Figure 1 (cartoon, rainbow over the protein chains, first blue to last red):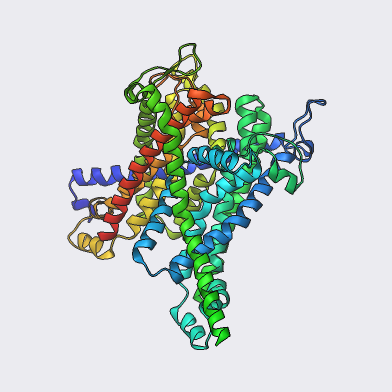
Figure 2: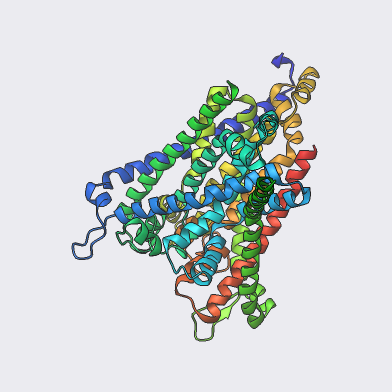
Length: 286
Length: 291
């Protein structure tokens, strides 16, 4: 049938196909290049000393253990706060809210939050948490800023999964005489665990990659601290450390080592998100 | 009777707690808006709105400081426009391929590749841009320094790709099969059908994807800061430039007095841009829902 087409139509088809394959090829090549290049440059620079020590001016060595720990602390602190807040907000929207206008306002606010660039979070975080709330430049102030940034994510994923909880479950529990809170705690919440977990993974990914919001809230220090001491003092996460080492210190070897670590972690998080998604989908369909 | 009263009170308290949790997002948006306005207005008032917005010179640390942010505004606009011009066609054709032509297995693999692109931290883009793109631009175009608007545009084009691909893909997948079947039955080839029927049917979603990309590009700070050179020049493809975001980020740590206040004013201008973009995004998303 193709033979009967005019040359103009044939040309159009060939052109469109070519553009599509070119674009897909370019996108994939880009990702492969990024991964290979960062790994090739970074992995040789990852040494045991680098990841197990703190920087020492005396020995002139650089260690990123404090940055690794800071990243862990900030992820933990953010999740501990954002999960209850986000889940609670989603429960309110899905289970309690009767006023349609209020729901629209809250959802609009969440959308607006996810569109605000991280540098603005950084500035307002600095003004509000560091100065107004008196937290100073600390990991905790950084974590609080990240809580606001990730709130819409956790809220949305939880809300989506709450919507899939069958109404009959709630009615069954109400019929047995349970109060509203009891129904939510024992019937609704356990069913929406997938949304919470998905939100959790997405948030970890975002926290790991965030830098602009942390620059002025969590600071640049590289001191080795325990978690409680760490949360109240200034500290760089891996991304901020990468920026400082690359842009301000010209230590590209260390920067690439951190980049390679971040790349591997990003890969792991993406894979986990996919696996978890598939697992829950299967469980729901059963 | 007493326990009944108690449990009613208890349920009310729980309801109240959830209401407060629900309102945190609204409160956050309000706090951010108020803080930006309150801290951004004083410097604008002192410098004068016209001098601030349309002044072409930014010399915040000079003897006689000048606070004109037109270079930053234009750089952000040109940089974003450039990134969108490069990123949109690539993202668009990739999305059409994934939505209509790709084998399900291929589609799954490429989709996770695109997610990975979205997940890579911006500082990693900045680092690779700094060490690959900047020297390449210097050598190819024979300019003294490759850290320029062009480098920023290319990095941003890569960074907006995932948003454009994902949102367009979703809306292309939502085009009713009947449209395509009707077109095929009338004798159009599959490729013609995808581009002349499916794409127009998904146009609101694709527009939303582009607007989302605009928001990403205009708000990006760290990657741009690492490749754009950070001098307050008027934009030119090979000039070292500052974006609205990087103007704030690069001076914040050592700023004081009016300079610091002016940085907050820049953030306020950026915020207004973002709010406009959000409004456009909502407009397109709503129209897509209605379609």
